[in-house]
Length: 119
Image (cartoon, rainbow, N blue to C red; front, top):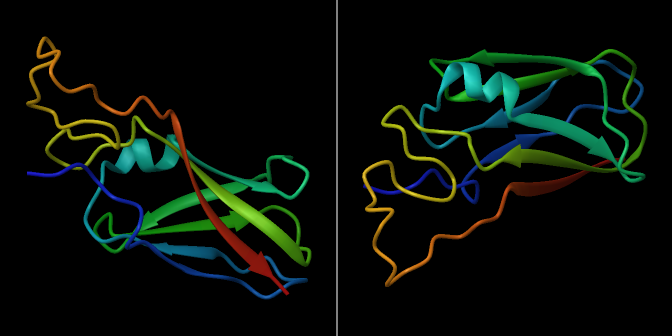
């Protein structure tokens, strides 16, 4: 059993000047409600991009549809570590990990980032 991993996620970026969705293709099904509440998009200035998140393809894809057309430039997908797979494993630890075991300390990262650019 493993924690969800963002490394194999694939991003399909939209065209600038449109409100096409940013498509996030996931390696595995993740919690539907948490996908809607733990992901946000920011621009190069750190400003949150307003939009709607739609979860599709049996929780294997997330579409972010902005309320305003995309501008050219760098963006980040921010994902809170509390995002879980269907077994309850989050980005920092396994669901069934013994939290009283002090031999290993889990990562305490609270937000993970994926970078992309719209040209």
